[in-house]
Image: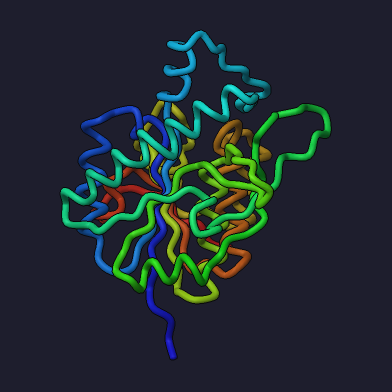
Length: 260
């Protein structure tokens, strides 16, 4: 028997920071047919709140160091304010959304990142998901909306990369569904020139990805996103797409499709 389709969409980048863009995206997401899951990043709100409270954001190699004060702030913003604002917006569009962290329903298990050269504090690396529980939500007519907070099963909340959460959920759910994974952000896809939104590389396979890395065309923050994409494809996800938020509604535009 063929599997039902499941679309997993990760929204992040500057889309999260722009209320008008986010509203347009959520309207499109709400009308997306079939089974679906939304994963969202944190945007800049946590950094702003930390600043308001006099807590300086600590970054090392472009990654946030999550100390005790910061895990409280990111939990309040990601799992609270931001997650619930997204849920209430989807409810207003007749999409029965259910806001979740990784701790809810033991949906996403993680561990505190092992210290090698840098101690990132309460940063979490994902171990796996509870696919059966998440499927129960979907079968109950709900649309799970996951924030970037996980837990270690021992009472500790952890700050986790949303791209990784989306990839891990996609892999875990691929045992039950035919999964498409869509990463949306402010760009039209993977670009040959960061300053030219029309320079989209429409198709990238593993070999081409290696060449683009070697040429320095894919670099910096795009590298971990691409690693998550190919990891998902290698572990059973049917399709991975990267594009701007309108890609979930309009496949006539430019976007990047990844294949093995």
